[in-house]
Length: 212
Ligand SMILES: C[S@@+](CC[C@H](N)C(=O)[O-])C[C@H]1O[C@@H](n2cnc3c(N)ncnc32)[C@H](O)[C@@H]1O
Image 1 (cartoon, rainbow, N blue to C red):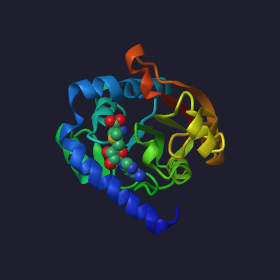
Image 2: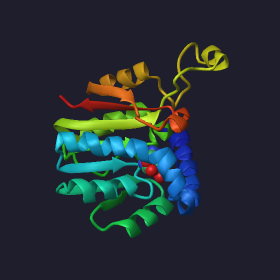
Image 3: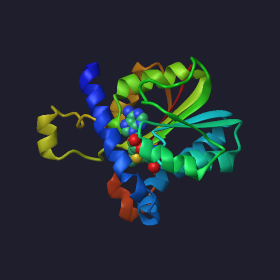
Image 4: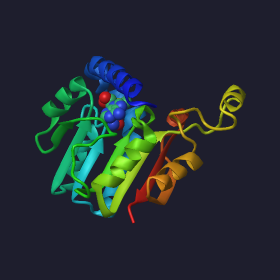
């Protein structure tokens, strides 16, 4: 997508999430939809032992705050484009450095971080550009973990429309691997997010890679 349509899309996404911010933290919505992927991120980061971590598209800051409280790394950052979501995040924790910006243009120097995570937002991104940016800001050996919607199976109409590929924005597991590898990452693990049976319709996938 060219720069101007992308900017307009980002503005619409930002407006929507600023509007939705006040209801986002509802306990039931969080437990059923968002928390399982966040639990997986905590486990992946704990196993990796990263010290400088960023949560991209951090929303109201639930995951970034958990990272700060549960893993006690040296530095935790939360980045989002939406003022409304960031306002909630700032009220949640002062242990996290909250920053405004798009996933495709991060406010960090090359090689500054040793882990980048993102949950429930990758479908909004310019995915190749965001992954290239994650690669840029990570030090060699750094970890990237993306949890995103990835359909378990396509409806016949989608198969027809997309020529057998998953709809744009919701990559298949194979497409996620390709996106990671095209950005320069080695894929270390990929699996469905562990969820209670009654929420498996969410169909989210976690892909974990390393910058060689
Ligand atoms: C469904 S919320 C997910 C929030 C959080 N990651 C979670 O798991 O609860 C999606 C968030 O992505 C943010 N977002 C969407 N596109 C973005 C982009 N290109 N760069 C940064 N943030 C973005 C929105 O502002 C919103 O806060």
